[in-house]
Image (cartoon, rainbow over all chains, first blue to last red; front, side, top):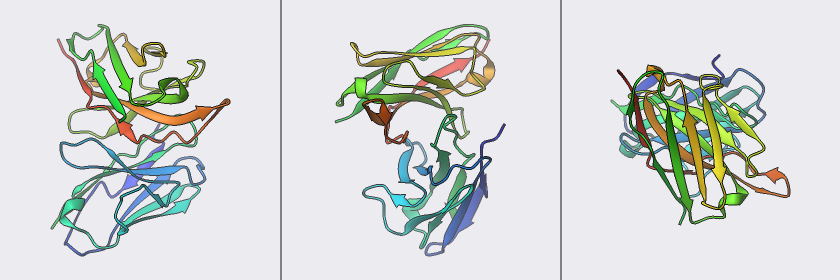
Amino acid sequence: DIQMTQSPSSLSASVGDRVTITCRARQYISIYLAWYQQKPGKLPKLLMYAASTLQSGVPSRFSGSGSGTDFTLTISSLQPEDVATYYCQRYNSAPFAFGGGTKVEIK
Amino acid sequence: EVQLVESGGAVVQPGGSLRLSCAASGFTFRSYEMNWVRQAPGKGLEWVSYIGPSEATVYYADSVKGRFTVSRDSAKNAQYLQMNSLRAEDTAIYYCTRGGYCRGGNCEATLFEFWGQGTRVTVSS
């Protein structure tokens, strides 16, 4: 029973490219959607919440949009330090499910 | 400084049991929701369980419901995960995460801003 579906599962882009990741919820979740970034070998980091509110300290090249069931995470200009796996997560109510993740690499 | 330190991970045979602990410090533990999240080798994040500040409210992922039990001890600033009937697919690093702040029966958003370093559970014969 997959609650959150992300696409693509992986992508490769050049430095400076605009990158977009999508997340679809199986049920309506309003804007109760968070994004996490997990760099290789590191703990997940809360990137964004309420679909579009950046956590303190997150670069402004990251942005989010969407409401209801469809959401996007955008990196306006991909940087080498953005290499990571990105996860969406619903938090309106249990189950607080994560998406399957999107692995972002540099081409 | 918020600190979450997990312990109790081990190698266990299928069908066995294990109890994980999470020691919390640097915040008012009794006022926060707590969760467990796991990550299987090379796989994504999977939310496992939630426990409210008063322990009256608990939730589980379908994959562990009926086998895992979460609890907390505010006197010890700790949460626990009792895992029974373990399966190979429970093999993962288990992370303790702090949820939202609760006051007067209302809680803030269940966001996972703080994570422990994790404890490894391997289910294998």
